[in-house]
Image (cartoon, rainbow, N blue to C red):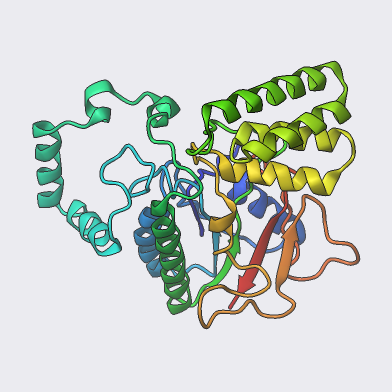
Length: 332
């Protein structure tokens, strides 16, 4: 069972997504065994919607559940940056709303409410990502803490349902393109004065000019001086990281590029705090630990040495980048 908030589309010629490469890997490793891989992942949903899907999957007696979730927690339904209703409501209210909308009476009341008080989506229609420009979320926004708590709680309940159904679970962190994906939007820190911003813009312009001319050392020097005034501007960190990467300073580049993703105020990608709630060396959820010898790191290539059971997953779909690892943990 593949659960998540990205639809793993695949074709016969080019299988992609978790469903595609899982099925291909299993067929290659065990050609005499028939595997049925069921995709119940959808786009534009988050953990609040995946939880009832997991409840339905528990009755299907699957052997393994594959979880690839974490996107859309902020900009999706009930997130702090959503355009679809109330932002970051308490978790009991979220549960009640979803339970009501699962009934015909609740759907009728919801339709009547949208007719009486149409929202921005109903009035203007769906305009894609541009609808979120007025709902930017800073990294220190108080609502993010509630979003992270909700995600952690939903993930724990999904794992509990899988265990109750007798399924083994593979949980993967979301892959983020940090090298080739610049931030969608950036904001200066709120207390930046007009004089400081003018000086910042001078250093930033000098840095971009030097960067375009190929003088990376000069560009990095101006990026550093601009960051001393304001290091919360995501685009600055992204350009700084790209310059460091071009000079071979990989560790510094990774740090800046990751910070640029986390500072992006249009939070379509999973940030570092959200990924901490996924299993790494041990579970962050009480009472759950990944068994020894059952951990794998998806880096786009097979692990060194002879293949072992539980290590056959390869990050080869089109959505996953070879340079950006995603950690997985297989738990009983």
